[in-house]
Length: 447
Image (tube, rainbow, N blue to C red):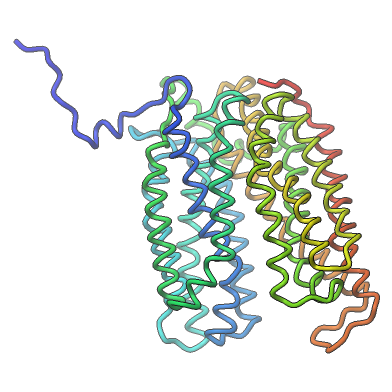
């Protein structure tokens, strides 16, 4: 009788993949490629969807604002729900890969449909927006949260994570740049519907490639049973009782709020403080991305050398001090030069934040015996959505305090000063609070 095992089909081999040891370079790059479509879709949607529905389709701005609030609330709530569900259920394909595989096609299809509404009255367009964006939100969280949850599982040490995060964040920066600058070139030349289709097709291709790097590790049956037994309420309680996570997530919220305030304030800064044209906002944002690309590799070396906590303290100090430079310039070129220093800090945030969260997850496993990456990334996503609220409150408060009048042909001189403080003063205060949070962060181990 022959004992030769029957040959496995391609699908069975794909299902049976498990990672042992460190990932290969090809797996690392493939995994990192997932950050390109994630940021391409996010940046394009965030930057242009309101303009498209209000200016191009004629939907009242208040209606679109309400729809965007609903989008933000749904997205925030989905993060911990999907994270907890992902942690609790293992299949023959693993915990994370099924979510990514099942969510990819609905994600790109829903994104394309956002830009392809049927000819409806404004009320009908709002309904279309709400339905399609709800599908987009569910699929985006399912895919991107589970991709992120794989990061500390694939890369198990600080050194591996620092190296593995470099290609991922480089892909992310390219996605941000193309989502911000490439989308207008597309919709101006081929129209909004074609833009949506092109970006969806490109994103689908990159997500399919990235599946080659989505390789999970084995877990024994006892661990699987314990993970499945932890309900959502206990997941939330354990997570927010973790001092390391609480200090981390508060610091992360403050840093995300700093970035949100900067991005929202740039158009006002160009117009009322520097006296430039609207198009000059690109000249302020481009140097940030240009400086961030090589700086990611530098921060990777720093985190490997000194560990997550010390690297994070250095990042926050550099980022906060760099934003102070916006207090000085009187010209667009001067502000663009300041943006180079800010880009170094932004690269540090991109490189170190997820490495630090991976350390929190490792510490949780040492104490509980469970891997709960999904819940930690979900809880983090839920909290940092608050940066949108911080941005809105700070921006509105500074404009009101400085005497800004909406739609006025000219503003009082105090507006220029207030907006200068918005970009060069408020961020450093938020960064100082974040520094305190990470100073209190209790995990000092480099591993």
